[in-house]
Image 1 (cartoon, rainbow over the protein chains, first blue to last red):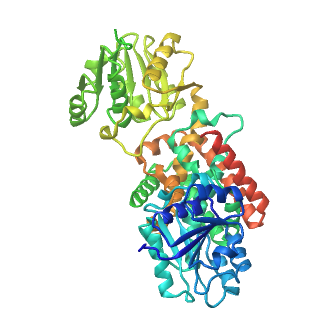
Image 2: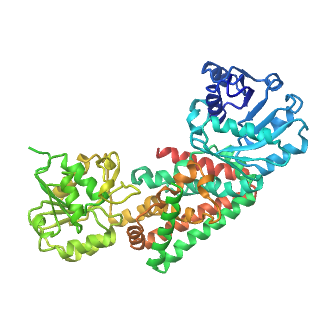
Image 3: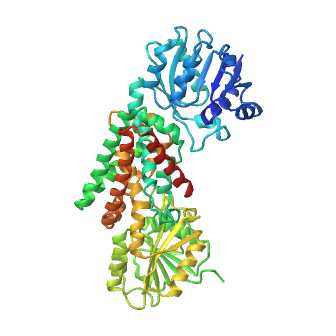
Length: 283
Length: 283
């Protein structure tokens, strides 16, 4: 018997959905189906044999699915669950992969059927490139995976989701409240994306920047290659937290500025040394 | 006959000096010597066979060296050249590898002998780790290498330095004025290091940051692992330029902030899209 004796549906066969399908297909679930709005993507996923069958119409697979994993934008996640509320199989577990949690979960729980369980999830995995063609089951290897259970979720169902996450390769699963998730992620994920964009947006038009950079600049700006639509949504839906984190960061930059202006070598050295130590702790 | 029919001395057998020695030794120069203040480092470099012989006393190799490459801190570079002014062989070319140029070159040209040529150089290569044990000839592969010749430099000598740089693997050599070098580097190298440190210095003490990060945070903070003494010196010696660049960056961050505060989705999307495009240009 398979380790995954479920019918699973992946909603959205992009980078994350495609990677999920790849990783899960290898675990030999009862059935794995895909839903996408793009016929060509469905065809490709079927040809890659990472899903058993793909559908444009969600109703068909949802009726028989025990576990549904949505891999689409946050607002679209809410819309998908609401629009298809009548199609889910009784007892189904739905989990998402969006980068924000509090607002999304609140929206869904306004209307969710009592016999369904929606468990918020956030794989801390990604790539600069979008789409099924960049999907890779290895993106989950040793990645952090945050889940945000609430009182409404059944213990057994949370355990099932945790089992799946572990099976696809995420070694570090952290459970935390949706609100706390959004506070933390504003710092550890959203702020670095804004900084990378803000740094490269300073690039002088007259200068062929490429010829004057090394690894530090490339590394600092790597995630400026971004899905703008998605990240705009993630940031706006978490604006209070992100504004707070930007302010903390501005103060941190101001500390460097003050040390430089006052030629305080000891202070500047201290700031660099502190940063160095803190960075080594997460290596 | 070797492509490098010179006696070469490397001053400072750390990450950059050691890497230089490795790369040059393979090109079979007439002789390659090393100078360091640490007997153990000299012994290791000799055992690694990346230098023919190492010296604590600079006088011995300098008297016979056609080319001297200093791989030490900026202020120490100035001191080394001044302290050993009488030891250099007539006609010798000295080049350095420090990350700032204008002040350093001015200082050296206050006292340089007429029969010597000092040509400023800056390999855009590095690693987070310091010391000979991390030296690697491949750090130069396809790296940018900036050189900052001045009117006092002889054309032939500039060409010799360019030849060496090309032979160790740097494909992109850019010649520019020392002043311009320092302006540009404040943005493309010094600012990313300050940002990385400032970002990680925001990390909340109460939070086990490591468990909540993905590639974006790790990439954005990678160069926070830094040689604090060296970077303090580089930044302080280029303070006017770096303060200007910090200010430009602060304004760039403020653009994001404004868009978020006013819930201007179009503007935020535009900022991300612009960053994405600019980043792709340097990939």
